[in-house]
Length: 121
Image 1 (cartoon, rainbow, N blue to C red):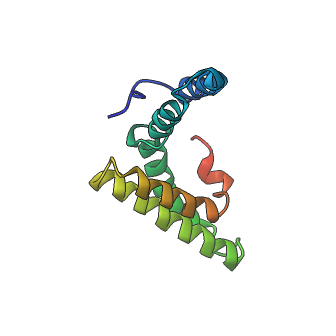
Image 2 (tube, rainbow, N blue to C red):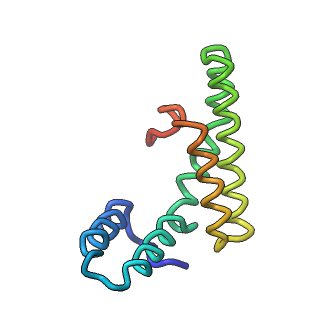
Protein backbone atom coordinates (compact mmCIF):
# COMPACT_ATOMS: atom_id res chain seq x y z
CA UNK A 1 0.00 0.00 0.00
CA UNK A 2 1.01 3.61 -0.38
CA UNK A 3 2.58 5.93 2.12
CA UNK A 4 -0.55 7.90 2.92
CA UNK A 5 -1.76 5.74 5.79
CA UNK A 6 -2.17 7.88 8.86
CA UNK A 7 -1.88 11.14 6.94
CA UNK A 8 -4.74 13.58 6.74
CA UNK A 9 -5.88 14.98 3.41
CA UNK A 10 -4.29 18.30 4.41
CA UNK A 11 -0.93 16.63 5.04
CA UNK A 12 -1.07 14.80 1.71
CA UNK A 13 -1.97 18.04 -0.10
CA UNK A 14 0.86 19.85 1.71
CA UNK A 15 3.31 17.18 0.55
CA UNK A 16 1.88 17.45 -2.96
CA UNK A 17 2.24 21.25 -2.99
CA UNK A 18 5.79 21.07 -1.62
CA UNK A 19 6.67 18.53 -4.30
CA UNK A 20 5.22 20.77 -7.01
CA UNK A 21 7.15 23.78 -5.71
CA UNK A 22 10.49 22.00 -6.04
CA UNK A 23 9.84 20.33 -9.37
CA UNK A 24 11.73 22.75 -11.56
CA UNK A 25 14.89 21.82 -9.65
CA UNK A 26 14.18 18.08 -9.59
CA UNK A 27 15.53 16.13 -12.55
CA UNK A 28 13.32 13.27 -11.42
CA UNK A 29 10.15 15.37 -11.73
CA UNK A 30 8.20 12.68 -13.55
CA UNK A 31 8.86 10.17 -10.79
CA UNK A 32 7.74 12.62 -8.13
CA UNK A 33 4.49 13.29 -10.00
CA UNK A 34 3.85 9.58 -10.51
CA UNK A 35 4.38 8.92 -6.81
CA UNK A 36 2.06 11.74 -5.73
CA UNK A 37 -0.64 10.78 -8.23
CA UNK A 38 -0.34 7.17 -7.10
CA UNK A 39 -0.91 8.26 -3.52
CA UNK A 40 -3.88 10.47 -4.42
CA UNK A 41 -5.46 7.67 -6.47
CA UNK A 42 -4.78 4.95 -3.91
CA UNK A 43 -7.37 2.91 -2.06
CA UNK A 44 -5.93 4.30 1.18
CA UNK A 45 -6.87 7.83 0.11
CA UNK A 46 -10.14 7.38 -1.81
CA UNK A 47 -11.91 4.28 -0.48
CA UNK A 48 -13.44 5.66 2.71
CA UNK A 49 -14.87 8.89 1.21
CA UNK A 50 -16.25 7.01 -1.81
CA UNK A 51 -17.90 4.26 0.26
CA UNK A 52 -19.40 6.97 2.46
CA UNK A 53 -20.77 8.80 -0.59
CA UNK A 54 -22.14 5.54 -2.01
CA UNK A 55 -24.02 4.87 1.23
CA UNK A 56 -25.54 8.39 1.31
CA UNK A 57 -26.82 8.44 -2.28
CA UNK A 58 -29.71 5.90 -2.15
CA UNK A 59 -31.54 7.47 0.82
CA UNK A 60 -30.88 10.97 -0.55
CA UNK A 61 -32.23 10.02 -3.99
CA UNK A 62 -35.34 8.46 -2.43
CA UNK A 63 -35.92 11.44 -0.15
CA UNK A 64 -35.48 13.98 -2.96
CA UNK A 65 -37.16 12.00 -5.77
CA UNK A 66 -39.86 14.60 -6.48
CA UNK A 67 -37.76 17.65 -5.63
CA UNK A 68 -35.04 17.41 -8.26
CA UNK A 69 -35.38 17.64 -12.03
CA UNK A 70 -35.33 14.29 -13.87
CA UNK A 71 -32.10 15.30 -15.64
CA UNK A 72 -30.31 15.84 -12.31
CA UNK A 73 -31.79 12.64 -10.85
CA UNK A 74 -30.50 10.62 -13.82
CA UNK A 75 -27.08 12.28 -13.53
CA UNK A 76 -26.88 11.53 -9.80
CA UNK A 77 -27.90 7.90 -10.38
CA UNK A 78 -25.19 7.56 -13.02
CA UNK A 79 -22.70 9.15 -10.63
CA UNK A 80 -23.67 6.67 -7.91
CA UNK A 81 -23.13 3.81 -10.36
CA UNK A 82 -19.64 5.06 -11.19
CA UNK A 83 -18.79 5.48 -7.49
CA UNK A 84 -19.93 1.91 -6.85
CA UNK A 85 -17.74 0.71 -9.74
CA UNK A 86 -14.70 2.49 -8.25
CA UNK A 87 -15.36 0.86 -4.86
CA UNK A 88 -15.62 -2.54 -6.61
CA UNK A 89 -12.28 -1.95 -8.37
CA UNK A 90 -10.66 -1.13 -5.02
CA UNK A 91 -12.19 -4.28 -3.51
CA UNK A 92 -11.04 -6.57 -6.35
CA UNK A 93 -7.98 -4.87 -7.87
CA UNK A 94 -6.74 -2.15 -5.49
CA UNK A 95 -3.65 -1.42 -7.60
CA UNK A 96 -5.49 -0.89 -10.92
CA UNK A 97 -5.00 2.88 -10.99
CA UNK A 98 -5.63 3.05 -14.75
CA UNK A 99 -9.18 1.79 -14.26
CA UNK A 100 -9.66 4.12 -11.27
CA UNK A 101 -8.54 7.12 -13.36
CA UNK A 102 -11.02 6.28 -16.15
CA UNK A 103 -13.84 5.88 -13.64
CA UNK A 104 -12.93 9.11 -11.81
CA UNK A 105 -13.10 10.93 -15.15
CA UNK A 106 -16.55 9.41 -15.75
CA UNK A 107 -17.60 10.51 -12.28
CA UNK A 108 -16.31 14.04 -12.92
CA UNK A 109 -18.20 14.17 -16.24
CA UNK A 110 -21.41 13.72 -14.20
CA UNK A 111 -20.79 17.07 -12.49
CA UNK A 112 -20.84 17.90 -8.81
CA UNK A 113 -22.59 15.53 -6.40
CA UNK A 114 -25.44 17.03 -4.38
CA UNK A 115 -24.03 19.26 -1.62
CA UNK A 116 -25.82 17.18 1.03
CA UNK A 117 -23.84 14.11 -0.09
CA UNK A 118 -20.54 15.96 0.20
CA UNK A 119 -20.97 17.44 3.67
CA UNK A 120 -19.62 15.66 6.72
CA UNK A 121 -22.21 14.50 9.20
